[in-house]
Image (cartoon, rainbow, N blue to C red; front, side):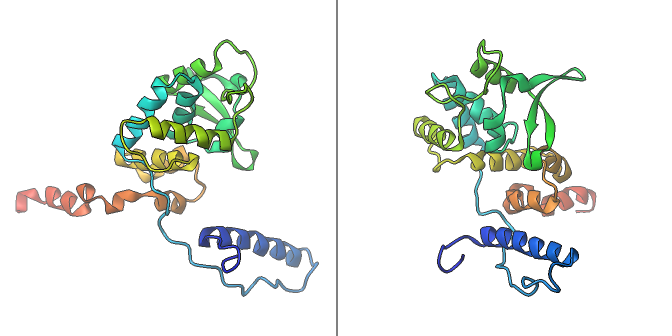
Length: 235
């Protein structure tokens, strides 16, 4: 996988985890005496995600470009990925009927990983974006392509490329996961604690959230300043 197909370490490690789990189950069920994957070395996965999210200014520029687009699906797409933190398959899989209310909050029913159903609260701006994309349709997908069919990840990527070209700020080559990454890093920059971000992003392991944390490289929030401010009376 590494030498021939040139897969990244994270991809190789993830696929080997599936193989290891399969053989472990075979041993537990007495199908095999031992697992042939026990001593297979997995590549080291970097502690930080190689994907870079957008900066605050870049994210605002993308939101503005999407809001001004003549296609209402553009703003709904960017809002659902960047302001709700949905994965692209989650956003494309939502239907108009998934919008509802729960305990006085407007929510979106999302089918996530492992077919887990979660209710994601909708901030007013995101709710309006979804309403605009849905129009008067009582049923069907929220996000549609130009042909009126359910949007898929390929169409979403093309729409993001077009919005990046129309932005007044220079943006990197866009892809859907970049907005989910931006959702996490922007939340951290806004001062939300790591546990809160983990819950919002629906990460099972906090280490997954930490891989997104670019704030450790942000000198403006370096712990040295916090310590100096705390000890200001003595210094």
